[in-house]
Image (cartoon, rainbow, N blue to C red; front, side, top):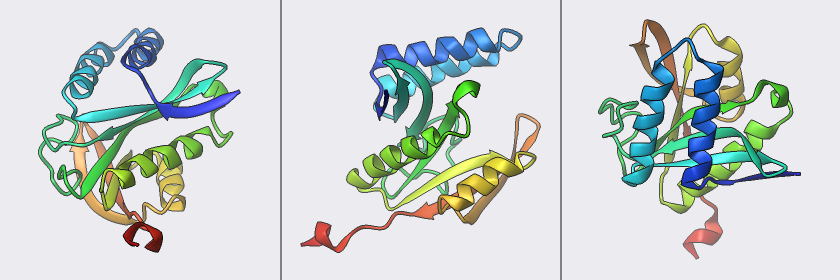
Length: 169
């Protein structure tokens, strides 16, 4: 059974521990775990997870603050009031291509909307054309930034969240 929701801290730790174990040759994953737990603990981010039979197997983090190192102060990606950034979006290989990240994205976008964010951004390495195509399919179709990060060109796209007329009534 699949569930998509905001993850508890211990579930976020479990997701990062899995990534660390999977990427043993890179110390970056331990650094990123510490960084993202700091964001979580200080209200700078929310991590959502896809759960299969109670086990978190996919994730996405909504960065709420431009102070997050992943944003590097680039307010075009996250300004803390109207624009938030979706980051660390991934799922275990066995579950790729089954629509679970799309379902998780809907939960993330809904939460962002409820918090008053009007726009969301998401990045994809330029060489990852498939990810860019998926993001455009989801409505992230405005290119807002090209950046060099960790030796890779990253393209950041933006989506304007639609607010229903019912919310204003």
